[in-house]
Amino acid sequence: AQTPVKVTVTGAAGQIGYALLFRIASGQLLGADVPVKLSLLEIPQAVKAAEGTAMELDDCAFPLLSGIEITDDANKAFDGANVALLVGARPRTAGMERGDLLQANGGIFGPQGKAINDHAADDIRVLVVGNPANTNALIAQQSAPDVPAERFTAMTRLDHNRALSQLAAKLQVPVTEIKKMTIWGNHSATQYPDLFHTEVGGKIAAELVDEAWLRDTFIPTVAKRGAAIIEARGASSAASAANAAIDHVFDWVNGTEWTSAAIPSDGSYGVPEGLISSFPVASRDGKWEIIQGLEIDAFSRERIDASVRELEEERTAVRELGLI
Ligand code: NAX
Image: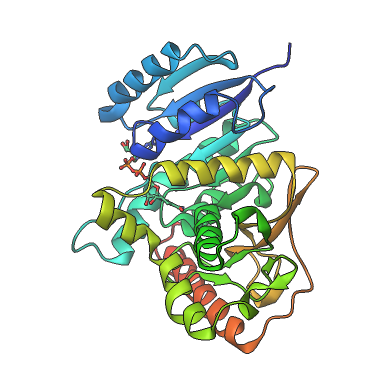
């Protein structure tokens, strides 16, 4: 029988964790024939709640789930890990400055990066979901010098999926007819969902909608969707975030021709090298590749640059705080 793949989930007792773990255990993360072993990392106060979730996982009797371990020790949680989903983070609370937020998250993602460096399996793949996701991924990566830099990624797949769904609704087409959607930049309000390369039935999406809708409705609706969900649900996106995490890792491992993911920049498209920024990507042989050769017009350039500038500011801030 195949050796189980060890998947470590941080923030396992949180709401995304609750939506995510059952899907991993059912085989949706890696494939319906791949056994998994779950490792749940939580803070001490939430270990008991994680144990409750583990009881429910047991009660599903998932054929592919070969074991569950629960700990508040990052060194144990990442020991031998093949996939790490870093979901637990310090949320911004009222009155918190950006520096405080980055500092608090540095205290989480720095040590977790080090634990990954020291204990994870050689093929470790890391997806950071916890916000500010791109910069948290950078902090973890910089704390893991022995792990190839490109194994650290951050999630913009939820933004990508939101963009697909908004465009499908506008054009009244099934999402499956939309190809080559791209989210650029930071997973934040500055992100840029690009319709100038997106194809619908072989036509460029930006030419099928009017410019005012694209600029004043589509872009802000996608970028502010998280806030709209909180407003409607009284809680932040959880099932859709978990779904996007599943999509990201599944495609990373199994391949895709085109999606969006925040990966370390190699300087493509003028994004400074090393920033973990969202790009149009393909996945081949288990590796993300930035799709090259796209023409970027002035409208897109301005928006990509604005989001990348924000990422640079975050990188400067975490450097000044000594977090990287
Ligand atoms: P919850 O507050 O429900 O859960 C977070 C969990 O993380 C808690 O159980 C907490 O105890 C745990 N935690 C905190 N510090 C930890 C540490 N050092 N080690 C291990 N666990 C720790 O939040 P939830 O709704 O699950 O969201 C989790 C994160 O995802 C947040 O940072 C959120 O902002 C982010 N999101 C990112 C998205 C993305 O597209 N990249 C979208 C959804 C979501 O907003």
